[in-house]
Length: 252
Image 1 (cartoon, rainbow, N blue to C red):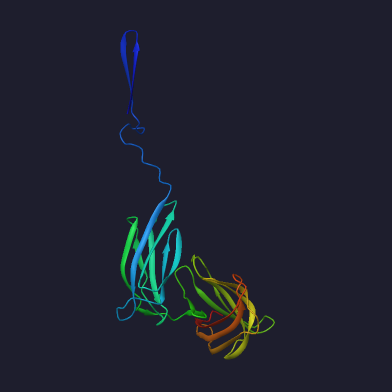
Image 2 (spheres, rainbow, N blue to C red):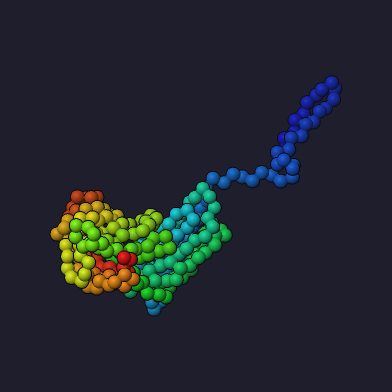
């Protein structure tokens, strides 16, 4: 409220200016340009011990993230220009390939403690597990991000293609791998490959690498196998060896 006093023709004139809304009753709400959300919690392995080798995946209305878990807990935050509505959280134990159920949480405050998450309630039956030296990366389907495997015999040679149908997670990202062969056995890797994993980044794999299919099922059944291939890291220019395994249901 602002009061202005003035003398006019020997009279005292008082003008009252009230900064209110159009109904002169309710003050205007402050303009919010940024909403923040903090999320923390703990992850337990089977048996109740702290998870030491796994991941927690957090999906929000305005951003997603996959966090490496090595000490049984996580603490992260998001920021958006619009309000958060719901959060989905789930965890995976990379050692046992067990996972938690997906938690859906309505956002009612700017801080959420999800408590203890048990990464031991269900089996992970589809995955790509990759290793570069002592570094390990595991990719599994999520609500927004599925892993697919397809087989084509219409290219220059029978080919198996593993790829992600979406990649909204903001951290390590596996995109695609293309291998020769459509049957159980060992084959050369195809040139087409791409991944961003920690400090490793590559889009071209030499055909000196190999893939071994231990199981090659029909449509709807599993394709299982292992990978072994050298590659050049685009980040530091050095050569490394990629090894790993996969188990996915065949799409076509």
